[in-house]
Amino acid sequence: MGSGRTHPEPGRGVVVSVVGPTAAGKSDLAVGLALRLRPAEIVNTDSMQLYRGMDIGTAKLPEDERRGVPHRLLDVWDVTEPADVARYQRLARGLVDGMLAAGTAPVLVGGSGLYVRAVLDELEFPGTDPEIRARLEAELAERGPAALHARLAGCDPAAAEAILPSNGRRIVRALEVVELTGRPFTATLPRHESRYPSVQIGLEVPRPELDERIARRVDLMWEAGLVEEVRELCRHGLAEGRTAPRALGYAQVLRFLAGECDEEAAREETVRATRRFARRQESWFRRDPRVHWLRYDDPDLLERSLELVAAAAPGEAEPGTGGIEESARRSPMDA
Image (cartoon, rainbow, N blue to C red; front, side, top):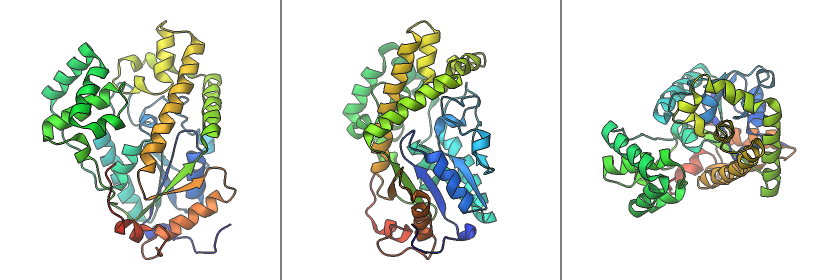
């Protein structure tokens, strides 16, 4: 149970972020925190929940499960629009700054690590060059992602290790940044320098349990009508988009609808791909020493989380609590 420490007043200026792998229960904890930290609002940090109509496959929390807590930055982009983390950063920081000024507690929730850090950390994004991008994308189309990934491994091994060999979009971006800046892509990634007083709470799920939860979630998505959702989104240009059609579940269903596999194979591949993705999420967040890991099934999860929020309040951090003051003394590490 809680230690009796007073929870911070909502206007104390703490940004709370709930992170961890998919299917860990982040949304439920975020809503619970927001209800206790009233006035509070939730800010989405899941890159695919930004897309309108992508509800079932992204596990977007239904309205009735939000329990009256405002949820921001859901349904922002059309499925034909490419992901744009720099644009997202401007939107999210504008919201967070406004909430803090108004005495509202921002509660970030989502498993897209770069989007979390785009809000919380001092992070600037290198620009783009249409000619370089077009040339690399043409090469990607001609030679495939493996060839470009091999090139990336030669000029930036750390980036190649962090990016899946099949993720052509991210490989192209990394190579573009290398060419633009003359530095490794990883050199442009942020150090752990917080923009706001903040606390990151990571939900930890033992791997066998997480694998089971993911399989169950995919089954529920199919039962809820994921295939029908993808069919409807195809009428709005999903298959022509650059980012949305690569989303977990959507990519597999699109293959099924195109006749490239049967429905059961699409479902099984969604489970496998989601499990792989969850491992990469864990790896990303584990590299950040500021994340406080709590068991997803801890009966005192909400109270322990509130204690961490209290410790992160400006002027409230104590030695050993892992609050902002302690984080600032740690050696910065590249993501």
